[in-house]
Length: 232
Image (cartoon, rainbow, N blue to C red; front, side):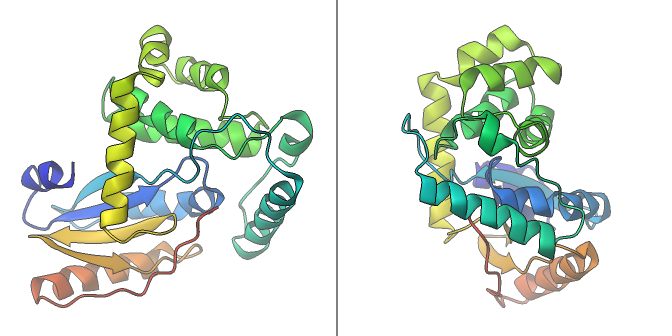
């Protein structure tokens, strides 16, 4: 995936975004990510990679994990002003520690065109964090697909297809080969070199400056590894 993307972009290279659609820190970063996309230097492509936060599971989420994630949501709301969470999720739904279905949903959406990757991710985040719906459930993912304009029947067939799961495992393996251990992670890739970028959840200009500096560093053969990503 990465090599193919690099071969189809200009010499400036690629901005790699490693994420999980059910990662709450990715939700917190969304406004800055959207601002970054509008301000990227000319010729810089973007590559989206699914990191796969939590594998498939039918087991209800243990109470300690529920309490931990609710605390993460409160921490994010305090440290990233404007990030909204609907805590009714914990009352209305039976959560599972499983984000692979949502990740496969992004790939199934992407099968209908690359533009659906971002749209499906936002649909999942909106359902989860604002509408208190559970994206670990296939029927919720199919409903989201239809609501954003995808061919819901084709999406339903692709969602749990073997090819879809293999594609997800490939992206997870790629993220690990890049040294990613948490989400979101931003990296720059150019001519076989990869540099990790720091994230600022409240100021996209700081990250944009790091991107420009990173491009210069990669061109000069220097590397930066200062990011400490989150994983919930």
